[in-house]
Length: 140
Image (cartoon, rainbow, N blue to C red; front, side):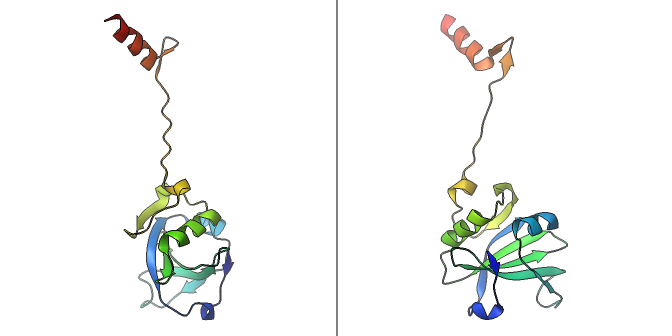
């Protein structure tokens, strides 16, 4: 990932995802230079933005609201949104729990979209509760 020059992107970029993250996480996960956005017509709150070229070659526009701690990821309409987000998530360890919204036609990569739930069995008197229930069910 690198900061791109404004002249590198010739078309408009449209939102594909928003996420909530702290400013510390923003600087850790996006180690690039952001520009302050001071034009009140450009952003509804004090913000910073960056045009980024990902290692896979796609461009993303990042807008970060300093009051809301909300990051908006925008991409050019010609790009495949799901593929572009997959490239972004290969470089940024953004947890699924931080994603507030994504465009309806966008699929998250498996490593982000998957909800791995590990449920441990409750332990009663040195045996798991599921084991105890199965033995009592067998007696009936």
